[in-house]
Image (cartoon, rainbow, N blue to C red):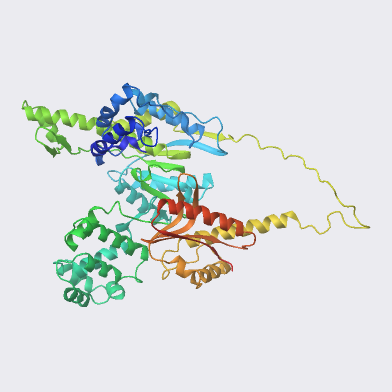
Length: 599
């Protein structure tokens, strides 16, 4: 999968395997090689993905019809309106064969009843400041939420850089809009994650007297951690320097019960990884944690009231009902490999201009490699925008800064050209009824109706269907609220506030979490996953809560209301979910629980 992101190192490993597979039958008969990829979604060049090397390596197989290529004809994700927009976008963004790779809706569409639209919103600076960009984005999001009648959780804002993501988040939070990162929040963007780093630095770092002195005067530090000098002295007596895994692990465990277990488990996992790979000391560990801060994520529960904000790279492979892209395109000089000098180099724009005027052989080499690198960079920028746009299921909005007296970058201009042809006014809407007209109910016939006795009423003993419907609906909505609250429960010591729960529901939820048959299961040690999809080659499912430790996998589903009649469902899910996880983790024991909230 994601074959387009293959690097040179991957190719060196993969090609002998492909050669072996395609050389003929094996011990168990015919063998085959199957790969799925899309050149238009190659966005990891900065991580080593190399299209030219990959095309060159498989070219002989394709020419000799050993490997055949085919394009996917249908887009099963998006509305017909969005698919038409993507096809127009492809023609403006790409060159070569990618321009012709258009798609169409499948013949049997899934239901898209309701509004579908594409919009372009122009953002203007206030002088040199870009603050108005983020204010405009917030106001527009608020307006569209009201128009769509959807929860915040159905909306996703995607940006190119972490810097843009953080500014959008800050504007939303300032206006009391809760935010979730799509694949979890960055560890060091959480106060608790930073607290762990401060604690380790204060207690174990080699020479951090200024930090220690400052931290020691903090009331917050004393409330949570106690006297820092005493703790430093304790560790100095107990462990030899340089402090290694055992000292770091013990320091993290000192915070157990004071900070969320999920945060501490991540720090423990990262410490084990660092020192098992040859890491030398605690200072090196802290430096590594800072350097990888964007990629270490804390799982966040799915919450319908939290708008999703993340980088485009962080959302690849996902989909959202309503997508909003902030496209503030920059073209900075990036490092590239200079073969003649066998090293990576990076030059400013002014330095490149100077080198263009030089007759030196090395200058010509630099300019040639610069042009190749720039072409790759621009192609990858086009791919990044395409990936962002195609995350959308129903609606797509693109925010673009307006520039005065400047030419636009290539992708920005391609988006302008696409809207000029597809939606000249900057917006195009369509009401979808792809599910067709609802079928008329089939007539029913009742047989063997017993005769009525004497003055028996026509609807003897029946309950008003409206009352039944209302009762069931209230029960379902209550269950949904309880599930959303339980999805926020991470740490037994820090339970979430009532939020949308009424008094009865909140009391029921607290009672449930504190029950002796529930809490030992819910708060087992391990990595926590909330509302987690699980699947193997044959089946899939979504579980309310899953805890994965080194030896045990715990799967939990909640049930509100009556458990009557659910024995068969419980047994079926027990078998199916256990089989999935045993297939994925054959060395670990799997336990499945269906826990009733209202016992």
